[in-house]
Amino acid sequence: VQLQASGGGLVQTGGSLRLSCEASGHTFRGYMMGWFRQAPGKEREFVAALSGGSPYYRDSVKGRFTISRESGKTMMSLQMNTLEPEDTAVYYCAAADRIRSVSLARNYDYWGQGTQVTVSS
Image (cartoon, rainbow, N blue to C red):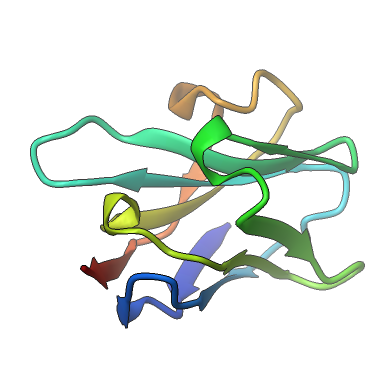
């Protein structure tokens, strides 16, 4: 499985971006998938995930971010609204062969290359 993330960019505070993650060589059906981010000098942190058909979010993005996937297709998206400077990071998409705790990076088997999101104040 190879994951390709795209859609990052530079936006002002309050703006929106939509990240996409496309998988090759596999479908997402029945798998756990998610988004993580890493800011300079910080550890990679959980952002959002889909597992068992249910969405999960870190508290700071609830109500602003929406994770989704195209049923039966190899595309996952993260709609990010009302962006804040604290959201600035490299965003990574990830997928797992089994459903496990969604917020732990070590539970994911496949990773995309990352896409930069910069929110200016």
